[in-house]
Image (tube, rainbow, N blue to C red; front, top):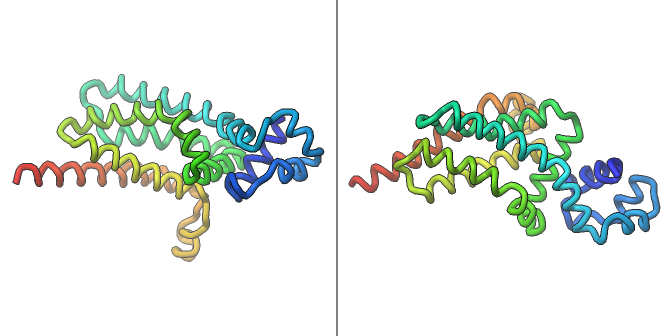
Length: 210
């Protein structure tokens, strides 16, 4: 089963939901496709099994990191602190987890841009995202809720592009930056995004004052 899920994860990460069939997975594993039909009703069932296997790990770690940060920060959380708890915990899995976790990151990036993937994003990840949103609201008590949700939208977009490992940043920078250098991303992303949150919220507050 692990071999089937690993193979499906790798194929979905490269070709997306519509670019992979149960026969493709069976062929790469080296089994007859009827074996996959025995375990999975259809491709969507396999897709969810791949999605859920690692989702429960990252969700549990992120939720704990956010809870720990919220308790430690008390009444004075910061945007950057909340984003570090949310982003760094996830990035550590891709840094330390080997190729399997990197494939899952690319799989998630593909999934987040398809109707099927968005359905499972809602199902599995909404609780941890809303936990982050709650802390961000405490950190930015005067901010419009709309701006906080847009800020999260931009954060997750940047994260998904990073996890996709397209190689584009490698070419643009002539090798100065690498798509798979998650340590470099971890050192920069939370701080960069926190500045964006603060700027948007301060601008909106200034506009209201005028």
